[in-house]
Image 1 (cartoon, protein in one colour):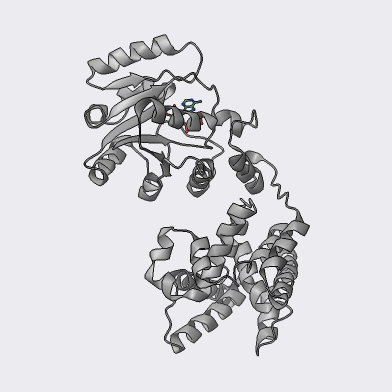
Image 2 (spheres, helix red, strand yellow):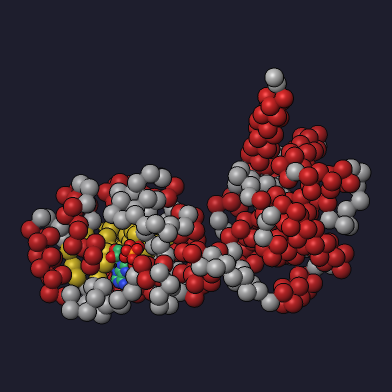
Length: 398
Ligand code: ATP
């Protein structure tokens, strides 16, 4: 199999990147392209850098309609500075029988001899380069000759250039980002844009009502109202909180098969503890459905919904608000709910610790597995509350 290897900062991904992958596939007969966002760009640093997870997500959104492209998190997972030579060695091990072709735009093509251990790269892969500007062909052919002299097998694509760049998008010029990526940027307020949620609340409410029994629909409205009050109390975004509350249970009444299908075929489905904990599936399914069917690309909302019954390490304020609003909404009447409700308005971390302690004790008593994210969250809140208590008792000492 001929596999294209396409690395970049993708900050953010744009039509020039997509065009390059399509053209390489056609001209070189590639069966697959691995698109690999870098962890930390060694060639360039940018001041307006969203998280690696956000860049990865934008790549996934951009290639939804390009089935031959697989977005790989290998460099982001490896962390630290990303060097192409390390990635190529890892890919050679993963695809020992296949031919790897490094895909680059002209700017990278000119700098190739300066890359770390360039001679090894030239030995392991061939290189295909695309022009980025009109009138570049001649310079690119000269560079190709130079590279052949250095032992590289390089070709220059005949594709006409599409002169767009991530820099332009970050600066708010042009519309070179694919539509789903533009939506992601505006919903998450990236690159200094104002956050814009732009949802039709009536349509979202209908979406939930159609999927739920009347009782659970009322619960969803109650959670949304509770979430908005908690957000106002603690200084979180009320709109994001309301949307998360409204949609958090939208998959709860799916049958087992549909639920797993909606979660998607990510690694998570094959996780033993996840499979054993059916009660937590609906959050993961809901986040996926919201993204694909409702075009909600706001990661704060999606993450909060995803982990609303598990918790996770590093819970954001919105995560905590949704988790707790679900437990103390107006329709909840179990013993102790009043105390927890009061605590939620006083301190989110204290309320989280109380709720997670109760949940974990209950799961342990019933001999059920505890999802790792729940334990991570518990440990973090337990430590931070102890630190806070120690700080407060220290303050009162003479
Ligand atoms: P920036 O503007 O931040 O420098 P960029 O638009 O160059 O970003 P990168 O993520 O740095 O995008 O590029 C990844 C790869 O895609 C590089 O090999 C680059 O040369 C190539 N590339 C980027 N834009 C184009 C384009 N318009 N046409 C062809 N190749 C491109």
